[in-house]
Image (cartoon, rainbow, N blue to C red; front, side):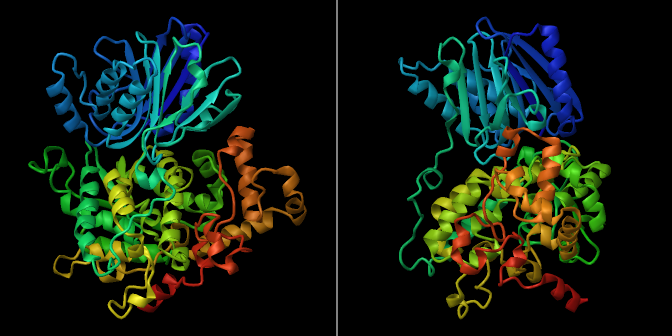
Length: 613
């Protein structure tokens, strides 16, 4: 991944615009410390446009510098992300349009240029619908995570897009002088845009500057599977679906394994984040089976970096450290384990909030150890890591899903959670890692995994069903279907104690003293009088605990604008639930703390570790 900045429709001179873009792009250089690129385009009808790129070189280290240019230099492209199917797209495009398509680099992102070029020439028939659909189809052909800004000097067009789930962060805003801005992080926009917001995931915006109403349009969706766009859709199987459960286990295991394997596409040293929980451990297990061979040539040649490195962090004696060590020993990874003290985490809070750009309590709790871990990873020379984000949202893995009243309610909640990932876990993982120039990849958010899990698996199979305990005593547990898909005693992916380990939120699993100390610190820092005035000082998303108040004050010291405050969601939550799911249990309604320990079903992993020790 990288950092991108675009300042469009500017009336400044090229010299002034270049200086401005360089100054603000520098605020995102932590995302891409390897190289800085800048390109200025002059539109006849839309002033000047500056594209700035802070590169983290992962694929095509030698020639993949950005902004990327079309062969004739008229189209410039800035991308943050990875396109995993770029090799297949290159082959297809060269085969179908040999006289029109040419590539200047080996960058995975360069395929966006010919995809745009072909879609841009579609005859719109006067109403624009054909052109819009052609551009949407071009976006759908991209298998990966991405946020990009493209400017076409000849056609006087601008195209902006963000991946379906919003793994790659992207904001857009409007300057007082009529400029249009895009940036990977809002710190590049704060103080320069009159208003800004998150660019919606799964959308693109095609702007034709020759039209009088060019800027009156809005981003339009290109990611529209039925499960995502139709609130009434619930996947279903015949009534005997539980008896047919085994029919989905093979496809699920194969689809997740393909997702992990494709994301090993990398020209630099890489590793895996390993918390010792189910999701990260499965990703590590699959990666370890494919690390010896290079996936870029379908595993026909030895990998450039065949030893898989794994990384974990926690306070001394935490559950995650114990289980991560157990998994690393089982898989034979080169394991790196670090500890931190709660005070070290508290000391980092201001830096964490500055980088992740939120005041959400759960996100900050989990981001802090990840932020500290990313710094340690960077020191080892690793530039990319795989991680297990998304599995809990897709398979109903949070502990509050034990209280889902029925399959339909569970499915609707998983959809809500997936749609909000760009505001929570994706935001955390993307920004906490890239604060130190480490890229994160998330196989469970692969398009094929999402399609299978959300369109073809009956949500009945995701329910925590105590009634099935007779058939399998392990059945009353979250993410049973995912666990069962990888339950292969004859060729074990993981030790049973990890495969069937109960869910721990990352902020809990790194050590329960972390959250307890945060609360105590907030209680000592924020007075009762401050809390009484909270609604007057913070009328939007008013903090209801001293911990939330503390984070809000730190956030607004970095990002004082109303636009920045509005980018952060609010509402009640328990164990990472949506506000709707809080209604599932009357005892949750008055709880102010979002920790997984708020759910009665939680069994202390710390006690289990202590017993084993």
